[in-house]
Amino acid sequence: MIKRRAYKAPEKSYYDVVIVGGAKMGSSLAWFLSDNADFDGSVLVVERDTSYEWSSTAHTNSCMRQQFSNEINIRVSQFAAEFVNNFQDFFDNDPRVPAIHFQSFGYLYLADNASFAQSLCEAQVLQAKCGAGTQIMTRDDIARDYPFYQLDDILVASHNLVNEGYYDGNTVFDWWKRCAAERGVEYCSNEVVAIHKNTEGALVQSVTLSTGERIACGYLVNASGPRANRTAQMAELDIPVEPRKRYTYVFQAEKPLDQDLPLTIDPSGVHMRSDGQYYLAGCPPDSDPGVDYDDFTADHNLWEDKVWPAIANRIPQFDSIRLINSWVGHYAYNTLDQNAIIGPHSQVSNFIFMNGFSGHGFQQAPAMGRGLAEWITYGEFRALDLSPFSFERIALGQPFTERAVI
Image 1 (cartoon, helix red, strand yellow):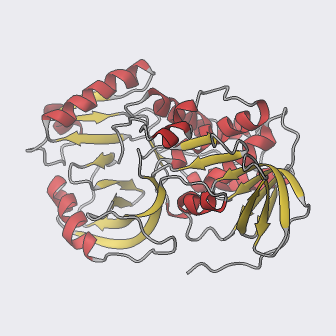
Image 2 (image 1 turned 180 degrees about the vertical axis):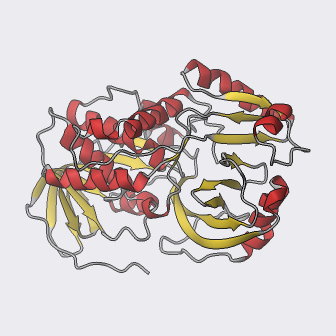
Image 3 (image 1 turned 135 degrees about the vertical axis):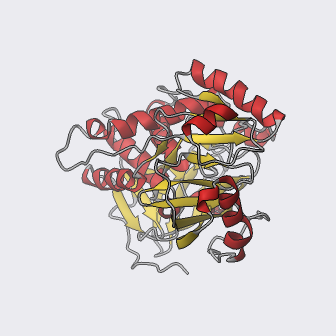
């Protein structure tokens, strides 16, 4: 399925940092390394498909929220909002760099049972403590502000209109990649096919590329998205990350709403939001196994059997809608706890993880790129302590608890 471009050899035989994967995560790290005045090393980004056609980056809905139940996830997203809102400033006001418009009409979680309602209320207290604008809405509050919902089964909602919604994430990605390359990061269309460690097995020494070159490195960063475990296995390591299908649908309503539709998380598992003149909806399949890395085959019954009925039930005005487009993407799904794995392996100290974002990658990429750039440069996280996402919990089988996953 992947249409590979002509592979080429890198310019050098040694790099201080080799990044496996050049999509949103790999390019975030590459840019933050290039932007850190204290980092003076060489960086190679190896990308197997420079069209990025089948990457998670290409299939994202570019959403961002602060409605998490764990403080570090809230802080990570808050930095993403800061980065997007001040995008040109982060690029030293380069006149070529555009401003990024943040569609901040928020996520709206609907609770149809007492247990979930309590979880939303508890999370709102933490979010407010962190400075987020989340509010708990009663059924009457929801009906007042969004009279188009059917609310017979709904108890409360959680909603945040501040720095929560969606944005043009692909423009962020494009400028990370472009500016990193201008600053000396080398992007190479190629594929890592082997990873070589020293005799003791404690350090990665080099990688072999599809074109035969053996490239030595100081650090090896696994930023290969849903293919993360395949990359880890080349170093005789293992992480609980696998590709899982997620579906996105763009539809047109015969009777459009007269106001923006927040990114609504319906109890059915379907989410929906405004998308310009259209609307966007998404969901996981009812059966959600890991799939092959190149399997993007769609289940065409999902729209008719699950998504459309949920939309029409929640918003009766959407009883007549027309599907405009749809696609299948992959989550890099962490089967342990659906949270990121960041930082070095506990035994192979220069093998660095940047994996397992489970659908949160676009909103977490700024903080994760900055954090790993700090770790590589200084040997520690500085702006945010990302150690809760470390590999140690994977080795111990101790999940990082985050209740607000979609």
